[in-house]
Length: 136
Image (tube, rainbow, N blue to C red; front, side, top):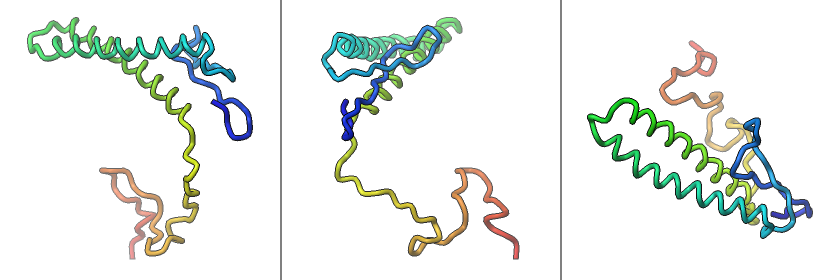
């Protein structure tokens, strides 16, 4: 996909390198042989995930399924999820940026109108920081 400055952004391919690292394709032609091969493999990976999910549900729905079958189903589901996440990441990277996007608000929490400056938000279920709420 061409960027506004004329450069081409790399496409994350649906397979890793032999070392397990991400592979990228840089091309000006979205219809090239390698691009079509990647599109076809993405479709196969997603279809395989659908098939594996259907088969795994049968094993997981049976309360007397042997441990080895449940483990095998879990491993195959993890592989399919990995593939699906790679496809989603690749497709997300190729989405065009919205042109009417407003700039992000760079003001600190205390600078925004009506927002108290109490420090960074806490994680759900965690205790508030004593530094954010000092004792009187």
